[in-house]
Image (tube, rainbow, N blue to C red; front, side, top):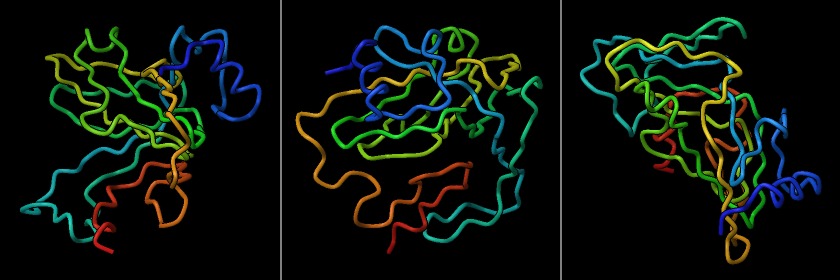
Length: 187
């Protein structure tokens, strides 16, 4: 079951969901919450490595870029970058989230989330977007613009082991964009 606007507002007021900062009048939609683009990005460097080994801690193959709130970030055709959202979120153990790109940006060739668009029950942090320009022209995106929509789904019962409980979870309470931590899964 997907939560509608009035249930999202109720859970926010109760503190069961945390989304901060949030302009409820602008960001809460009929069946979700618009998320805004942050000002931190990770771009991939040109490298002489023959490949990235997923079982080893990665070499420094990305650079972090922070831009001012009024500065555009230009994403070029074929480029893939990681970008953060402005909002810090906390999802309770009886909900999960899914993040979708906005169709207005999709019509410009900007795709949000090549893979993992799900937010696990119990997750907390600043969500990282996988942003790709699949179009033919560079596109300027700006911090603070609505970039994606968070949809909240009610589980039939709370998760037995929400994200962040028990074993170590790689991205719990993330504030900044990190490189992939897939190499930590061999533990």
